[in-house]
Image (cartoon, rainbow, N blue to C red; front, top):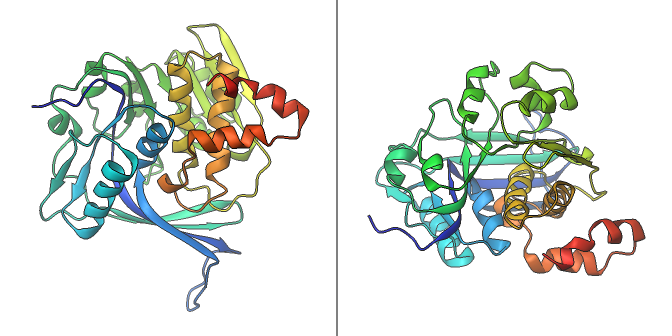
Length: 316
């Protein structure tokens, strides 16, 4: 197998075609038709990480299944040609339909409706012997995978909604060998059987060197046992158009700042900023900010406290 050139980050997981609607006042009611003020479409799921990493200037490889349908072709072209993501390890499968998600954003949150089937091939089969990478991002599923540890880089684990709502603690067994785990507060509390994000963080810190719990508009908190740092950062006050993919954008930006060797509080602030900029636009991957947009945000800050807290952006 021909490997891509040296990567900063290798990412693998389930890719979706996303359609996001924003501007709803409430959830649609049966028997009614609702018109929205904004919508966007594009790759979603694991593509949210790949988009963000590439836009932040990291050499990014994506291993994902694409359908051979028009939606799969569109997602492939946008990732490879539009964003420069290396798809050497990805595959298009004949007769398999690209999973599709509709996101309905209202009241500061979103609801998701998804259709799709499991990919015809596992990530381990698709990737085989992975190329070296400074970091690997894996979206945990019920079936463990072996490829992340073989990259030789730091492994960042993410997790999603559990449709069964059982939140099996067996999922946490897959964190062995991982450097970081970045669930949101609901996921963290559900898997650890705790009642607060702080208690969940303490529990997760026993399992991984870098434990991070994201709290949406309330920011994020983390413990890094490799450096002895603990940090908590508040959310940034922004108008939320669509929070779809914001957690993935946060996670990708955290990886970027970690590889840059920044202190923990700066890593959280950087990731928090990237997520805050993304929720002001509609869509998941397509809302990920670029380096120029991050710089523009800081250059136009008038709040002296924020200018001080985010002065490290000049170095990044």
